[in-house]
Image (cartoon, rainbow, N blue to C red; front, side, top):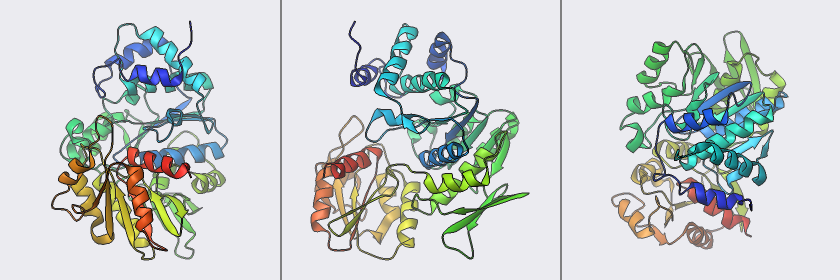
Amino acid sequence: MQTRSLADWLSYIERIHPKSIDMGLERIREVSQRLGLSRPGREVITVGGTNGKGSTVAFIEAIARADGRRVGAYTSPHLLAYNERIRIDGADAADADIVAAFEAIEAARGEVALTYFEYGTLAALWLFERAGLDLAILEVGLGGRLDATNLVDADVAVITTVDLDHQDYLGDDRESIGFEKAGIARGFKPLVLGDDDPPSSVLRHAYLIGASAVRAGCDFFFAPADDDAAHWNWREVGYEARLPRPALSAPVQMRNAAVAIAALRALDAAPSDEALAQGVAQARVAGRLQRFERDGAQILVDVGHNPQAARELAAWLDAQPPRPTRAVFAALGDKDAVGVVAALGERIAAWHLAGLGGPRGTTVDAFAERLQGSVAERGLRHASVAQALAAARAAAGEGERILVFGSFHTAAEALQALAGE
């Protein structure tokens, strides 16, 4: 029998479940048991939260690898290739390895209809278990309590931030959303919280199950160094580290790095000071204020797609030397696009709006209608992100900045356009 290609498999697994999102652990647990899966790594860190998950995973991965550990990282969504979702020892999984995992899952699942994300999660767990990992890092896809990654009992759970997003699935306020995200915590295990003021639902759940909350601004602290703009300090009771500024841009990346350090120090063996410094300096993740210089203009590509992420982009812009900034903005149909625009406000001199394809995308005209009443409502309209980016570049003067953001899909289309040059 001819083996399916990875592209064939991805097309297939998109179709075998009637819903793209169907939260719950019953299906994935049953297939996991049939596969005989036990533990993806000697230790496991699960990372949830509204924003900052991917960057926090990147910091944990880089620091742990610098400390000599064999590390696997499962993240989502991907930007340019599905293989990005499963990394082992710093390398994306090969097509053949993912296909082998999918074949094993297909043979085991019988009549159980798995979602696309459940299929991918099982593939990562199957590959991780065979890789002999010291540490497996699992990024939550949506929420936490009912997310497929919650199949695994984490040694350390992380909640980076809690804010409004995916309200159709998680609830309409931070308390409801916080309860869903807190579901990744385990009794008598550390729960690292990146918010200075986490929802009471998170703290209440940690108390009820006996999880030990490790809180930013309470149990660990971080701040720029007073004497050196190139360094910052991380500390907890009895320990302090002086570290280089993260290579990842934006003020929030210091917080993400600090949360990653807290998570690793909550494991049985803390990383060395040298590994902390090396990992913080070397961590990279695509689509987080990823910078390009083209024709005298600075182009920044970011996956930010909700108001909290937009507020972080605004803080980054405020910290930069002033220059005219154009926005290329495209968002999925279920996102708070008006809230995103409001967070950036008058920092944007000109708006280039774009449509997005796919089941959750919209045409640019429908997108512009959603922005009525905002400062972006009269933005120039373009059918695609690539066309919007080309128009913004043509209109940008010497030294101007172009910020491309609004979705992982937006970032992916922009990166593909830029890579083609």
